[in-house]
Image (cartoon, rainbow, N blue to C red):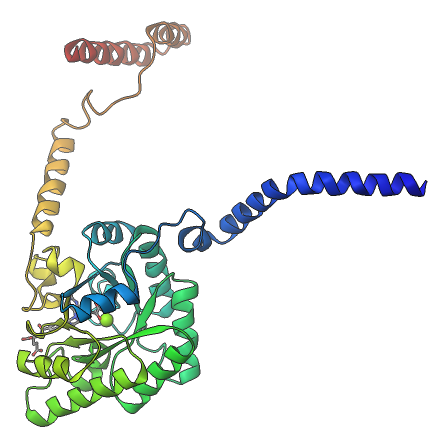
Length: 360
Ligand SMILES: Nc1nc(=O)c2c([nH]1)NC[C@@H]1CN(c3ccc(C(=O)N[C@@H](CCC(=O)O)C(=O)O)cc3)CN21
Ligand SMILES: CC(C)C(=O)C(=O)O
Ligand SMILES: [Mg+2]
């Protein structure tokens, strides 16, 4: 009796050992399907990140310009990633260019996380930075840390960015870095402060303000930021900030002396060329394409071809049916009195066959 039980246990142990490897594989697959984010960032097949804080640092030290662009979803992330751009910023500008708001204020942390997840699925090699949105880090350092952790843990980001260089913002940056999350600073025009700034205007155009921006940048550096965005400030001021720091500056409307540059995806592609969108396309932005015009032309052509009966035609109607099935169906329809219907089937089948003959 006892011996039998021991023997059974031993058998179970051997079977268990043999079952172990597939079981672990099944477990990890199960984990990955329960938590889709695991498969993307931590799966055994996940590609090694090409761009890290270390490679960014090396670029900065070699004085090679760092390139950053925004992306907000899977296709834009794939595009930016495949262009070998160093950093993808999931910017809160998504509020304006994707959601159609007039400012960046309405976008929520949950909205941002949704965009971050989509970007993380599309970006295999770029370094990923997520903008902390308005209202997700100002109330307390605790809330700032919690929001930053969510950006990494749920959003799949490598770092976060926050706006402003006041003592409270510097403290938030310090707390987030201490929690183990890399932080990018952002000074000059900080669009989340549009309410107090009174508009999207260039900043630091008087010496006293310029000194303040330089000091804010230095304070953010001291808090542990790995880089700082300089937005809409005169080139000489950006040059001064860049000289004053030992971390990279990433400029947007801040002249050529910054350690790197950033542009908004829709702006650089000329996606918003329609006058209706002109208000969100700043003048510092170079358009590397007129994608908006191409999209518009394609949509009009599609509409015309549908209206003219040119699309889909036989070429884009790929699903075939064998002649014997056509014959059976026609017989069936005729015997149930559906003559017009049967004729339509025969006619369409003949047209499809004629098109096929022509192709050969
Ligand atoms: N599409 C887009 N591109 C951006 O670069 C961008 C956004 N959205 N949203 C968030 C911020 C806002 N940005 C902006 C928006 C407008 C101007 C702009 O046109 N400024 C005018 C002054 C306008 C005024 O005085 O009210 C300028 O002359 O620079 C600058 C930066 C930059 N960021
Ligand atoms: C313009 C960049 C720096 C940004 O913060 C954004 O796109 O939200
Ligand atoms: Mg932003």
